[in-house]
Amino acid sequence: MQINVTGRRMPVTDSIRAYAEEKVAKAARIHDRDEMVIDVVLHVEKNPANKNRDVAEVTAHMKGVVVRAEEAAPDMYAAIDLVSEKLERQMRKYKTRLVDRRNGKTAVKTAPGVEEIAAPPMVEQEEGRIVRKKLIDAKPMSEEEAILQLELLGHDFFVFTHADEGTLNVVYRRQNGDYGLIQPQV
Image 1 (cartoon, rainbow, N blue to C red):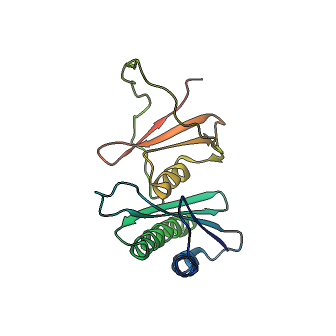
Image 2 (cartoon, rainbow, N blue to C red):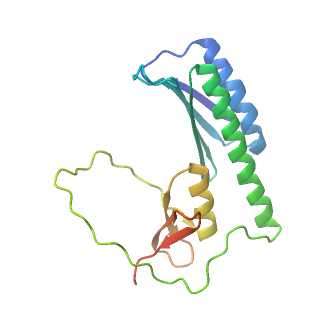
């Protein structure tokens, strides 16, 4: 396991680095894998009105899986504590799903009869522009694995290549807590 602690626009003291490494390593021992790389980024928000200015972000890269957690607190040590607890919960959740999958249990069920979703009409924005581009590694996986990645990353959607069909798909979280799947029409 490799842990990288960096500061964004701030120096990281040896005591904070040691504390972050200790807490994150303890949380990551759930999946004690040698090939796991964990990036910890610490930074302080500029807004003085925000009482939770110290932010800790953790991204754990495992074999084909990314687990991400972010927390803010009034103190950097407290932010590290919170983010390590959140990382531990997410690691346990991922490991539970792996064990369930090996035992033949399925955690996600597809609603019967759902085939097509009508998209709302596009509204053109006059001043909209692309402010960030991100490259993704759309690995082949099943819908269940994509939902697991969506949950582990804490995002609202996840882009992946469907393992059976070889097409690019998007799984997203709906407002009622269920999931939606966007597939290309072939």
